[in-house]
Length: 53
Image (cartoon, rainbow, N blue to C red; front, top):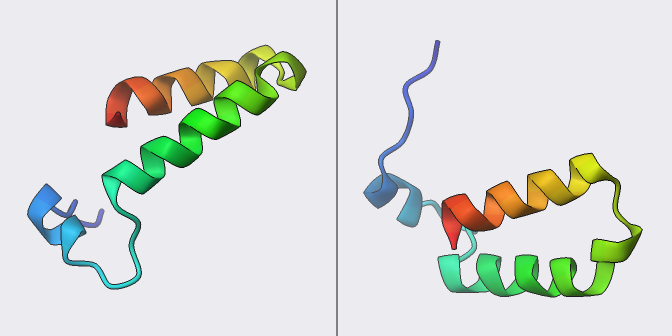
């Protein structure tokens, strides 16, 4: 099993996306696609937003 990276290590990964950009993109996806998504997709999006934004 591989070790998990700390938040500090994750922030140093080249080519990563900032939390602000991730949350803005996720918010746009939710606003524009919620009605078309399956229950599983909605749950995944809600969990991602809750956990990270």
